[in-house]
Image 1 (cartoon, rainbow, N blue to C red):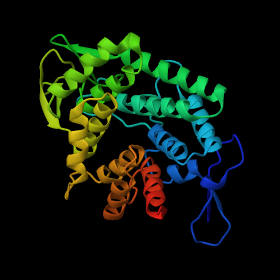
Image 2 (cartoon, helix red, strand yellow):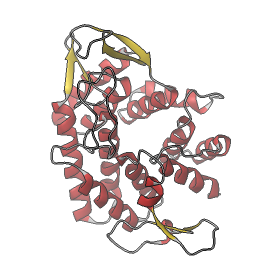
Image 3 (spheres, rainbow, N blue to C red):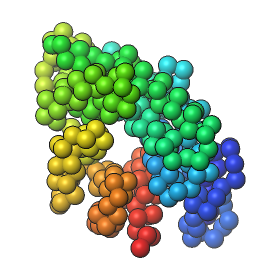
Image 4 (tube, rainbow, N blue to C red):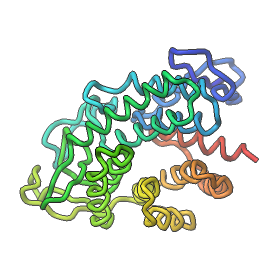
Length: 301
């Protein structure tokens, strides 16, 4: 089987072809690999874009960024692509067009990173325009509680406020001077949550009556650390260093995600150590991109 980056844009380059050892000559696109598992969401494309950018492969990166720009909806979000149904705290069914707020920020931040390095001016312009549209989407969906701003898990579906969603939005908004004040407020609100969610009171779907909900997991705490570090907050580095030394994790995706973050921060030895120790195996479609990061790190000397 041959794995290719074929997104309907250009021929694959050296990064996008990898032998998988079946010998049957089958060509498999990135999209097909992602869709073999459930939940092939936009973060898959964002993490593949991060990898192509990190490997200095501008054509692959441009193709992936173009894919993301085309997937973006008119209001600035990226939908999950899969219907979720409805939980007890949702006020509507989750559809394939609805978005997770952290993922909107994650994708937009990847596009901005791409725009800083691509040699293609038009691609950079499109990536920046897409990221700004996403920032405006998140700004519109800020929820204020007791005067403090937060971002919900899925703005179109529930009022489950989350630290990583709130701080992800802050990291994106902080890249724009016009949104800096709101970004600072979101960062402060997210940190004050102390890794706990804010959820509607039992049996309710609004925040008229609210309570502290369950804590976020280790993977989501690493996200918080990365987003805070992007904003120059020392708490971000402290979080990342703590998890670099972690022996046990409460969520399978954490070490693989941290390996990507460490590589992007110019810490290849840490990234490789995490990849070796983790033996990461994808469970959902978007995990395939993190598996590609692990494979890359393990193959790099």
